[in-house]
Amino acid sequence: MKTKCAFVAMVGLPNSGKSTLINRIVGGKISIVSRKAQTTRFRIIGIKTVEDTQLVFIDTPGIFSSNKRSGGTKKLNRAMVNAAWSAGADADITLLVIDAYKGITPELEEILASLKERDQKTLIALNKVDLISKKETLLHLVQKLSDDGFQTIYMISALDGTGVNELLSSLSEMSPEGPWHYPADQLTTINERLWAAEITREVLLDLVHEEIPYALMVETSQWELFNNGSVKISQTIYVEKDSQKAIILGEKGTKIKQINIQARKSIQTSLGIPVHLFLFVKVDENWKRNKEHYTSWGLDFNAT
Image 1 (cartoon, helix red, strand yellow):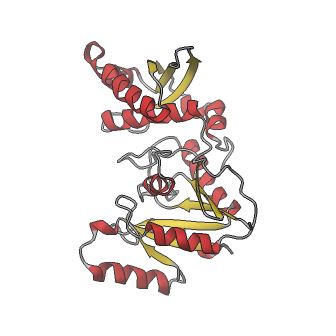
Image 2: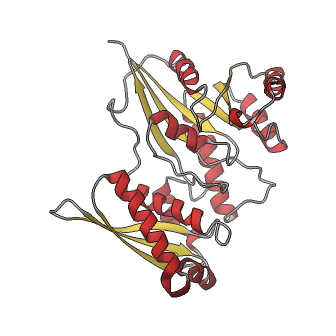
């Protein structure tokens, strides 16, 4: 049987719904989701194999304007944006995910202009159409994008699945002939240690999103499997200030206990085995400038 395979780079502004979409496509949670922009810090590979076609999706950090203030240091921001555009350059197809509810913003116009300069297959997914009640609003948006030179546009909702199958069918048709790169039942390439750290970070973003949206990082420092099938996981939560550490710990340790319970349950569900989770909070004002962290995320420390 002849097979087809395509690498699809998912790009877009922060909070456009790329992570929700890749989770919907692969049928499992491989990318964390948060109300905060710039939740995704590194490339996440999602694999969807249907019949003779394997689609390898690359969920990238959100692209934001260099003139717009965003969370994190300038170095980390540059590295994340560089990772997003690099993924697009290496892929067979670029899938631009747009928050249809927000429409075409000046930041989105920057991305559209950059995509037009690139000689590459580009599809547009107008996401969150379930939030728009007036059909005329969507039609106007489609017309504006078409006038700008983008003809392949799909209206979808990553949240409820509307239009996603049609999008996948189009991507399959566009895929070139070639061998599959992964087994048919594989959903992602992310390693368990990094994924467990991401799950804990997702819980942190949910529980302390107002106080510490970007100043934290989670690293899995220990992973020990026992004969009874359970696993001991130790993680370090890095923050930049003593005051942030106090927020995460909470009064008499109540907040860190809540974080531990939620993260342990989520990791346990993902792994399918009993989990013993130990969390430690460490203050390191320079963690965003640590080259080892960038390497573990697959980011270019020297990105400009």
